[in-house]
Length: 309
Length: 232
Image 1 (tube, rainbow over the protein chains, first blue to last red):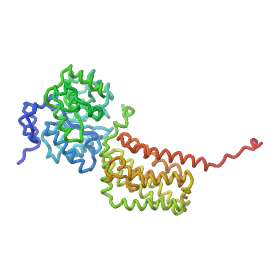
Image 2 (image 1 turned 90 degrees about the horizontal axis):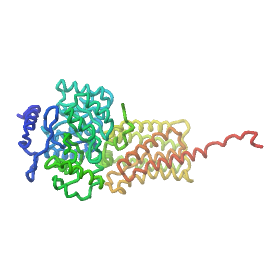
Image 3 (image 1 turned 180 degrees about the horizontal axis):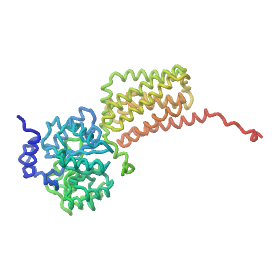
Image 4 (image 1 turned 30 degrees about the horizontal axis):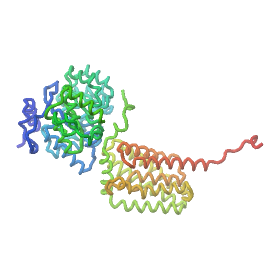
């Protein structure tokens, strides 16, 4: 008889908390021993999360295209095989939630999944969350976030109530492209948030000034969206030779450099690159292993990317 | 507080270029052999233009109405809506245009088709032919599989292109132009964000048709009655 979902999940979380990720059987054969997966604790619980997650903006919105859905399943398979956990979506992403549900069913609901979704629009938050949950095909979300602070005064109390009654594990808020940082700061200062999701990458670093230090002070986990500026950075850097320092941090692609820059910030919990390419998903997960750049190298990465971009 | 003004089109575009163009391949596969019927409808439109009688105008309006309804349902409602939250609204707009074309086909005074000879008529015929002949070739020109061909009566852009030509030939009322021109803008903006080579095609055809329609209206406007004192 198979172990109940919640039981498998509880055991997995206990293993992760004990640093026993390496005890998990690999989803696919690894060609060589890999450096340990880098994880960060969610400050409000201590639960460990791998520093690279999976976004679904654009890439998982493929509608009813069976071929594209199969490709999404390969992406997710590579992601989980690489040790990934956090998958992020939103009702605003078209068919992405339905595709994630399809993908999770194909992969027989990987127990490592950390399901992160959002609530948006002005009304009907509870119904919307229930519709999203059904699309994912999961018992409950781990994290729900108020998407771009839309109707935050109505939605955030709802999420906090759901958390208080055990229907949700973590509550958070999101923004992107630097919007409404003043409101984000106000909510971080006044609300019992577990997560905040912001845009941060080599070229968009405004959050370093106020939001990341505040997240550390308030013990709020930070999810980073648009790590590649919606593909703009990786496209610009494609074909340009990697500088010699990339090997020092175990990077074989610009995408890994860009991700390692983000997750090397001590206040970042997890970056969520999106891709429709399984090979890229596997490459991205390798950014969650091996050495991370120190402060000097971080400065050098910024300078070099600015020169090339 | 809402800050919609800070959103650019790229923030709202929620699907990729391959996903968008794959829709046409899936649509073509699903509705085959409707494309053959669409070709016959296209030929009937050209015949109506060449014939130019009142009944031909009614027939052309009725055929276009069917095409718009078909696109509203099979493309916008059933497929585009799956990847674009605005899809249902586009379906409603195309259904509205269907109603307007039905009205045109059934009103008491038959919609006469102007002669295709001359600059305006020639442009109108060219727009119709662009929808029928040029659009299906764009996929191949862009290096995409021919299965992704956008066919008149099946896909929205060629249907709108051909409709613009017919609206010109009918000297149609202003309200019949609204949905087609809005779609020219919406489709062009979407394709521009997707960096598709054909992005400018439909907006350019829309502007050409709009300019030609304005010229036609100016020509049709009766001369102002002269004031007696100015006859001098």
